[in-house]
Image 1 (cartoon, rainbow, N blue to C red):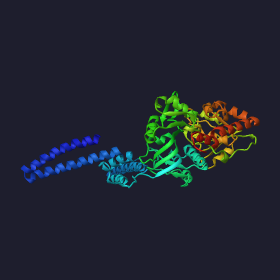
Image 2 (cartoon, rainbow, N blue to C red; image 1 turned 180 degrees about the vertical axis):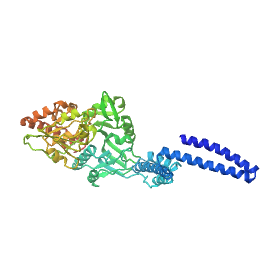
Image 3 (cartoon, helix red, strand yellow; image 1 turned 135 degrees about the vertical axis):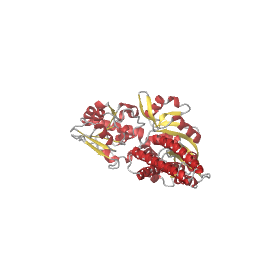
Length: 493
């Protein structure tokens, strides 16, 4: 900034001097005005050298070429960022978010502040032909609408329902609406594509006119922004399965880190398919809606029932009944994320105790606990996901201990259910008791080691808790329990 001011001042002075010399040239012979003009040019050259040296010193470079290279580098970086922004909007456009993406790309294409390369890329994205006509008429028993490019629990629940419905002879249509803000161009999950057979399970066409007995929507964030080319769906029953709380963390009577907005999602879905019901995946997220979002639920038809995720118990690997050995194998599986682990080192050590009597087995990664503890105790064994199959991993445990960040709200807790179904007794924080009842044991972190020691030291008690887990999964989370929920909606399963 100082250099610019100096340049402006010096330029004004030399401009005035140059005008004076020019006037002198009109009135005086060459022998007079030529030396004067030479002096002016020499002064301007000296000024340029002075200012350039100052700029080089301020920029920390050794030569004018380096200064020029930096300017070119910054220009190239700006162009790279602008092209990345074009690609982001093009992904959204290709995903069906036309009304939001088209104006953004048109603005970039017309902005003279961008380079020609950037403007051409935006114009080319807009020029790509896209189908705009009405879609075909289609008929399904059940249509499932969700974001089908996700890994994790949402996709597992969708796949379980697809398999259950297909086995019952139902025709299932899938409507994919990716997240507008995150990976809209990511391909559908490969397991979802494997489930699509072109007969019983199909991808619903863009702008199709669809009739169905049930429209089941899962994962509220997908509806924060809807595609412009979604099908028209006429369904006898329409429901949103709320499998995620609107905020990530809840503590001290308030929530933080919002993921989705209740009012916005309700308005978007109502505008698309009309009146519909909301059903939560369990009591934890249901209570969070009532406790923290009651003022946002105006107009929302929130069911008192739950739409629990389901597990195919017949396909689940089960641990044998053999007694626990001298070393208790405590385990858990989850994403390696801060929200999935106790945030305090003392609590983490209490939940997953060190010592020769315990072995801690983890599937999903151990970077977070390593950072929290400084280093992993010698009795820990960690595996990345896909290094060991979940069924094989669970079958090798004696007790399943699942503790997370104290302010994290787990909407359901699929991981503990998988452990119960595998015949492994489960120990959880008391917050999970409304969800699982007698299916698990509950303790504060400081009491976990004593509870595990007591449980594994009495084989009859261990077998009793194992059976309690089986009973809970059969009653609430089995395919038969889920078929009963579909039958309650009028489907013939």
